[in-house]
Amino acid sequence: MSQNQYNNWFLFTLLPWVASIIIRLIYLTMRVEYIGAHHPREIWDKNENFILSFWHDQLLLMAPGYKGAQTGRKVGTKVLISQSKDGELIARTMEFLGLGAVRGSSSRGGREALREMVKMARDPDDIVFTPDGPRGPRHVAKMGVAQISKMTSRPVVPIALAVSRGFRFSSWDKFLFPYPFSRGVYSFCEPITYNSGEDIEAFLKRIEEAMIANTEQAAAKLGEYGLSAV
Image 1 (cartoon, one colour):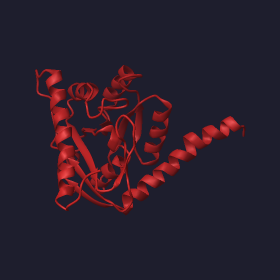
Image 2: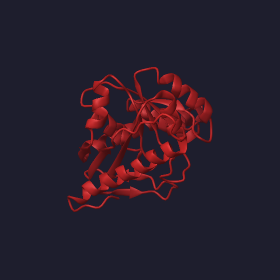
Image 3: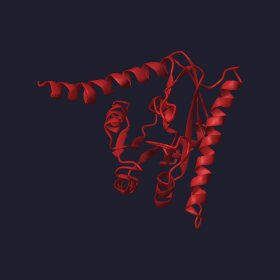
Image 4: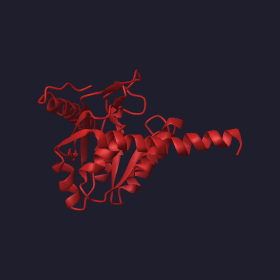
């Protein structure tokens, strides 16, 4: 094996596998609580699917948290991930965590990814968005999530994570790395549906406001224990 082949094997095969193990271990050590998990469960119980949305900075532990809310249900999932090298690493890590990937973003391959996700909406899979990714601005929703919801008639269900201890990177999204043995709160928001004839910008604004409020709700739950969200 050449040095280049070894580097690619390490970067795109071994590293994502190790990352998925670390993610699972962090989640398993945490004291986790759910708010509003009945919202997605009610949709799953009707054999229907939705669009799961969360902010980019909360990505690390979203896969095990989302899976944990399923409580034995087997739900297929597709995540929209950018076509960059970083996106490839994330996509492969998500695969080890049991989530599929659709490659594309608002800046690279966006139209193709949207078309692919509309096709995939015919399958019994949830579709996952980070509406402010991959480059921001932070906690500002881009149009893709609203467009997909309108085109597929699927509701948007925001999820947020707040943790009591962790580290924030100095990236554009202030990416969150939760520490093991911390307390975490996952909060699901009431489904948001597109109203016939509604202005798409107004719909996007409702999604964004709900996601912000949902993040605040998760942090407020930590506050009930005398803890502050990182």
